[in-house]
Every structure is written in structure tokens, then in C-alpha cells.
Length: 203
Image (cartoon, rainbow, N blue to C red; front, side):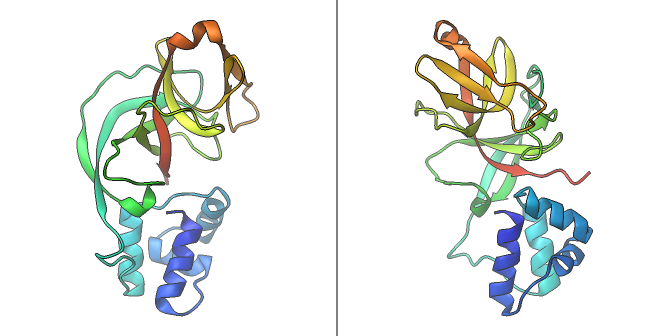
């Protein structure tokens, strides 16, 4: 769930219009931070949902319309939004995540959470954000969606698009150039999965 969607949901539950300032107070952050996160289409965390429920004295999700997904969080796994970094550990813990935060959530799909490093996907994904990955299961690449993938033994988070005989790798940060993987090198591309949510770092 994006932060602007949270504002709308709280407004519908309480029956009156919720301002960015009110939401900021409920979450213990500044109004400017809320404004920036609305602009960047930021996702909200489970703890933020809980803070909002407590502050506004409402239940945002009933058991009938929401569920909790338990996601494997690899705290020592980093995928680069810059020039590439190596996954160096696979220790994991289970984190409860509201399924409503995950785009296209399905119990039949496999998800995990990793960390983003670098700034090439800013402002969509910032350094330190936690990324929820829907693991690839043989589907076709969806043009202009953000994927985590391995290429030349390095892990990246980038937008991918298909061309006739190549894959186009794009960054959201205009300071980074667009790259391509030619058809002769496609065997070196290993798709890990599609990014279906980003838990924003507030540091």
C-alpha cells in the first residue's frame, strides 16, 4: 500500500479528511517527509499501519479483507541499484507483512525481502530500502517493470524491457546510462524475480 492510499483509507474509515500533517503526527515523522513519500509513491510498513491504527483509534483491515504474509527476509543480501554488488550471505528471518502491500499478492507465489544499495533507481527505490521480490517462475519479462537479476555474477535492481534481440536495462536516475544485454549474452542473465513492493528507509 502506498502512503497516499493510506491517507485515503484512513479518511474513509474515520469519515473525515485526513491531512498529510495529521498522518505525519500519527507516524512520528515530519509533514515534509510525508509529502516527499507521497510524491515518490512510497510504500508503508506494517509498523506504520499499526501506528496509524493506534493514533486514529481505528482498525484499518478486518480479518475478512486483509491477511498477513510471512516473508523470508535476507538481511545480509544486497542487490545493487548502482554498479553491481555480490550477494554474500543467505541467512534469513521471517517477517510479517500485510499482504495488501504486495502488488498482485497470491498465496501460490514465493516472496522474499532483500536490501537495496545505491541510487540508480532513485527516487523510486533509495539506498537502504527493503525490497519485496516475487520470485520468477518462468514468466515473460513485463516491459518496464523493476526486476532483481544476476548478470556477470553481479546482482542488480533495474527496469527491464524486451527488444527484438536484446534486453534493455534502465535506471530511474537519469544520471545512469541505459545498458543492453545482446542476444548472444542472454544466457548470462538470471532473473531472480520482480519487485512488487518497496519498504522505504526513513533514516
